[in-house]
Image (tube, rainbow, N blue to C red):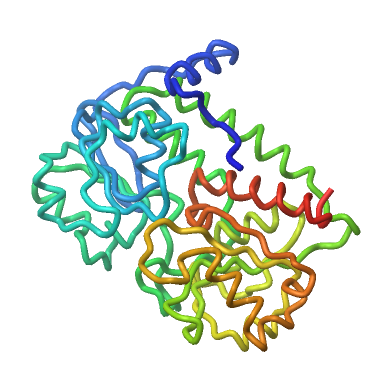
Length: 341
């Protein structure tokens, strides 16, 4: 299930929302300076040859109708939103995995935006912001992932002290729309997401109690630790949005836990991610479900016994526009199972 953000004509949708919204955002005045993850970035003009690193960044730019100004994209855990397939076909795909600094520079970008510190952060193996500064290319890192790596085993994604919320996504949409001088489109997109978020806040469990969730992204093998959504991650936000809680209490954005720990948490609902990258067999939701139902230990979990296993787009576990889509997917499936009203 995918609730539509845009029609097939992305710009037409955005402009129709704008026309029904009181007031218009001011055009961008250049030079524009934005403080982004502790770095001041100045834009002398709107980018014309951008490279988008990470699915969320690319899809935001497509939702803003900017496909003609995006030269290339990279790092796609799942397929593009169906509404954006036509627009995305105009953008060169460098790789669905992690690109190299050289392949990015080959596109002669005038702007590089990244969804994840894995691709642009201080510990990135692709490139660091200072690398692009040296060649005169301004950069932008999603506010969703301006995380501290301190006290965290995961120095790439870090940990999050407070529960993620959509305000960080709205900030990203607003700032990117200002950078490209399409602020009206940004405000229209934000208004649509806020309306959908409010609808999901009205969801309650069938028996009035808080359901506990585990969000399983993937594992290298059934015997390996599982990559999970952390307490304050986008997964935790989805659980909270649906009136529940994340059974995983680690503040790491992407904790890895053995199945003994997951079994001890004994969640009411297990959310399994659907991934299109096919890096591991357990990227597939059906492989995850088969393991949960046939393994002697996991088959005894309450969620498995009650058949409360739901499938969600794996990109929704990243703080992204997909997060609202993922919450809508879960709500629909849990209503069908009688778990939510």
